Image 1 (cartoon, rainbow, N blue to C red):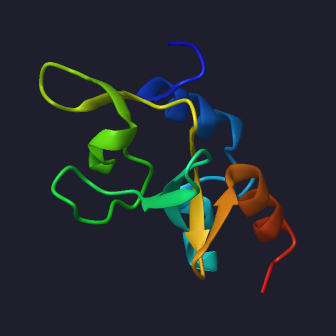
Image 2 (cartoon, rainbow, N blue to C red):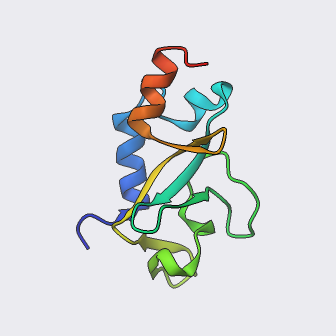
Length: 109
């Protein structure tokens, strides 16, 4: 399923944004929290573990069934809708990885 978000996609994104401020461990001090946005519905989903607890990094397992396309036999999320993108929430606003990186590099207030 080309274009859908998966664990492999998140790994590639983390590699691409290493050192830019577009990763959780780099922008957490600026108040960013990992989240997902469904661009189709405009709903923001904070990143969560499967049990609902907040996750300190992007994790697909806490996403609701309405955005999940496939699960592994173990029940873990394998893929989500193509309209779901990873990013961050800060002060109730969603930032793409690019926007968060730019904000961190410019020492956003």
